Picture (cartoon, rainbow, N blue to C red):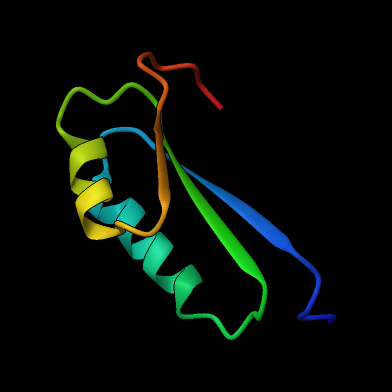
Length: 70
């Protein structure tokens, strides 16, 4: 596998911020050289976006404002 190709990963969250954080942490721990991770919170009303923004300050966390599904 070519580990220098740009790879973008979008991780969707809905009211499971700790599970999402585990997923993102595993991605960031990979040895892939050119990985970009974006977290999309799908309208959670439990503070998920704040939790994930604080946990991963260097990543973009997008809040959709509504549950838009997959």
